[in-house]
Image (cartoon, rainbow, N blue to C red):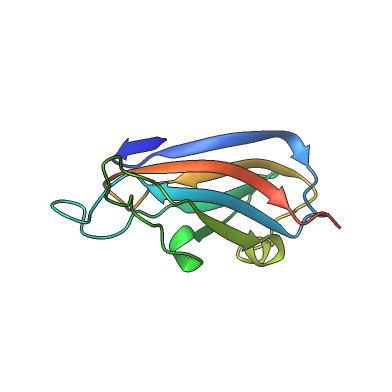
Length: 131
């Protein structure tokens, strides 16, 4: 689970230079831990997904650009239905100027800004689509 209050960045290190050029996408599965949209939480949770290359160049996209993050379903025990967010690596790399070097990735970052607070279940962060 990823809980936050204020800006937060979670970084997954890929070492000095992971070669992701043979993959088609970066995907992750997620769901909100909130049962309903009430009180201070009037909009769905969102994350910014960033890739960082060995030169420090960043490319990013918001999860909300590709999928709506579902909230927990009401029942005797709240249940999460995880949604897959999938970003094409070529499209993500092209968002950076100059384009991100997919042959030398250093990190995957999940950033919460501009959401003030929230709570998400996040799992299965992976590069997918082997050639």
